[in-house]
Image (cartoon, rainbow, N blue to C red; front, top):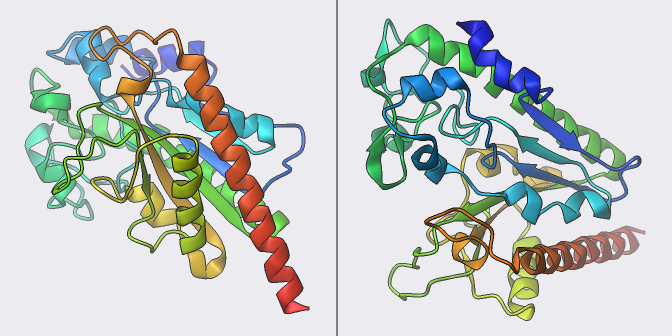
Length: 299
């Protein structure tokens, strides 16, 4: 059983990969945790949904949209596994006891809002509240996914952030995501192109989040901040601005670049990727300028 689970990832060399320059030149780390699109055969057999429907949980091609990060001189960590299989933007043990046969570990968080919504570490649902599984999973299956995929993923992300922080004296994590095209900002009716999340000012220095919004708006995008997505576990967990560890979640509307029914890329996909590359270049320049100002002020 374990061999079946691993085979598709072994064929792709790993559960995830780091795309990085020969030398890291900027204090940034890019992360695409939900763009994985390799679905193990054993997972498809366990599911009551077809492969196309399961993909509705993906952040389609977010790794490609933000590929410019590596070209600018920073590592990009990207998942090969799908978030419907294991979601690394959750606590390690947000588990819904109703999903499993066997005893849930006593340290598991069974009562989080994400578990209640069917979107724990091992999700119960995909988009539009569709149940993934035919029946209950053995709890050993959940533990295997967490120990074999989730924990190594986060260990790798921590190392990238720590190495960046040591080398540059700061680290800026950009967590790369996409969102359905019909998302609206409550109370305004705005349908944003992009949402910048900084956990309401707690995961990044205000000037970084404000610069991100201003740069994106200057490029012609409709932008919201923190509504309705302020950032998930990754942004919250790794953002420590008092220690010069900053984390932003960037959500890009899928309506901009794919047909949300067929999941095919739109012909101008590359144009959006280029615009996001320009956004990243300007944000890198802003952070560099702020760092130089801070250094001069300290002298």
